[in-house]
Amino acid sequence: MPSAISKPRYIALTDIDNEPDDAESFVRLLLYSNDIDIEGVIAVTSTWLPNEVHPETLNDIVTGYRAVHGNLLKHSKDYPTAEYIDSVIVGGNPTYGMAEIGEGHDSPGSDLIIKAADKEDERMLHLGLWGGANTLAQALWKVRSTRSQEELDKFIEKIQVYAISDQDDAGPWIRRNFPMLRYIVTVAGQNAYGFATWTGISGDIGNVFDGPDKTLVSKEWIAENIQIGPLGAKYPTYKFIMEGDTPAYLGIIPNGLNVPERIDWGGWGGRYKKLLDPGSRHYHDSNDKVISPVDGKERSTTHTSIWRWRPEVQNDFAARMQWTLDTPKTRPNHPPTVVVNGDDSQEPLLITVKHGETITIDASKSFDVDGDSLSFEWFQYKEADTFFPAVFEVKTLDFHGTERSAQLEVTFPTDTTTSIGFRTVNETSQNFHLILKVTDDGVPALTRYKRVIVTVSKE
Image 1 (cartoon, rainbow, N blue to C red):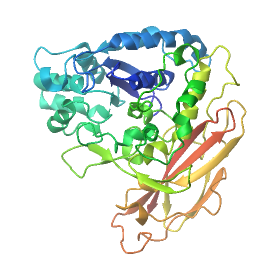
Image 2: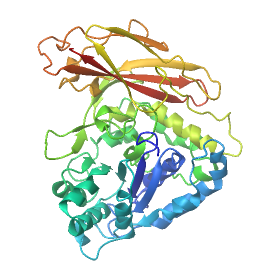
Image 3: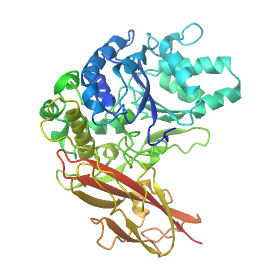
Image 4: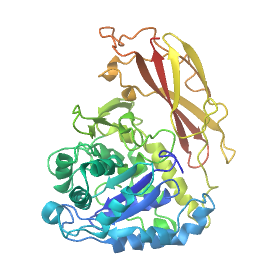
């Protein structure tokens, strides 16, 4: 069985036909169906589409996937058939929010969620709420009404939710009634999406924020790189922002950076922190400090934890769309394989050192299947370090000028004080997150990562 990181399980709940971005996100998801076990795509309602669901629109997009499936198989044998994708597309509860939740309101979508969570599979089931949450609410209502508390707890333990904000009143109901369900969401006023982490995918084109390179999410870039071939033809031009729902699965794509069950560690889907409430498992927005590639100035907003990865995310998408073509415009590119200290897995590498110790971390065995040259970049992901409450308190590690080398030499602190010296850690150890980015020189350039978590022990 694949690991939860190497091939995560996923169900999307989408208010498809509300606006173009759901269709856009579904096209991208299909290109990652070799790396993600798609166990369901449920057409649901939302505040923007309150009284109808459109699974047939999803089926229509799959016709584009069917036309390119043979080409995709040349690059990965794990792409599922179009027939399989069609078989897991169903409709959810066709009314708005909590209006009709309860006895007699099961739907193919709520049944599918229950069936998937009941599978004998040790991997987490990830649910992406691209629209409203009422179909999930019905599934939870059904399980609570028909099973013991112990069985309900077991059911909830297998699920993690990433919501693209609250798009109906079912999300708040779920969090009140099932507080131990892992639930990632921006909580804000009704329809107040501007400060939501997920808008980091492309919200700058709507002037929600600034900092990232807008050209990578422009209509011109999309027309040239994405709206090509039979599947690309199913990718509509955006009206508001591009792919607002895509962050609901970006963070589970196996790339060496993402750790799907640790959204607080950051990744392509952003970084969210758990509320200080022992009676719940709810995760909300958190800022990353990032230098803008446009003006060289620092940004620290809820959006940065997503847009900081934009070049890698968009290049990866463009490369996969090239895989779909009978005649790609350039030699098809594939991502490099990162090998650190002999470990080529997608899981974080765990290392324990002593205070003041200097070590070498070796990525020189990394390679590219296309024979491309590789570049290396190491950085300290301070926001993922958990032992101090504020990022500015985390000490900067000494890389001895090797941050652009395949072999990193790094020295760790000699004590447990903060970077400014007024606080001491009471824990027995500190964790530092080091991220390695390995990028090839293909077209487009593709990046994979290795997360190295170093525990500095007092012992």
